[in-house]
Length: 346
Image (cartoon, rainbow, N blue to C red; front, top):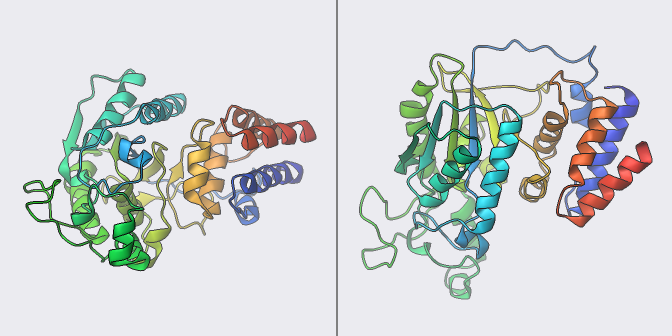
């Protein structure tokens, strides 16, 4: 990437993100991508593509509630988000051989909408309870800002139950209004959730990727996707709370079908994550909101979205085209600033 173009991308991203109340430091990522002559060539073992996707907005996402295994439907916005995910994947040329989803309607309805929008209705959607959201025990069905919960348990304990790997909420009993028979557990820690998800990953999803070249979509939930990302990126338990998963933003991993492990797919040897969020004008704001200070993940997403010919180099034309796409965002701050940057550098 020529110096002038690198400066343009740096200014575009570093000035855009504060408008969304986020801070980004992209210089290291830009240096690592480098120019066409200097970029690193990586050996690519045989691989398959797996897209991880959290369902679109549900009714209880809109009114933040401990959903767990409760079967709550998508909102109209959630359906629109699923359509948006389908469109960006279709534009990128994705074709899926297999679709896996949880047994909860918000996840499998998201998958159905995506397949309909991608004109791929012939692919069967396989539902599995192993991909269900984490079970929140006695908290299920309660609002996350419920003052009685705060008074009874305290903010610190509630945060620990939501974010720590081994902490589990109090179990529900059979008189709980949202009790369900097995295989539903009575409560789960995030580690419990990860263990069942990874077991299903290796027993069902990975074998379907063989031989290499098969592609799969996994439509699931915040904590099941978080569990998979932590596993594929080899993260420690302490790093898991930093993983944030936005509704209906696809995340692409290249997988070695022999081992089920993720293969690094960018030019940055220092980046921890091996996944790339598939960015679009429609999902930009959700990605910004959820990724927070994870500049590496955002930089890779921007780079991947704007690198139209996939040559590992961003030209000024590609950057300007990317800024133009941001002008279609509903956030007036994003729209105004991207327009200002385009005018400044045209």
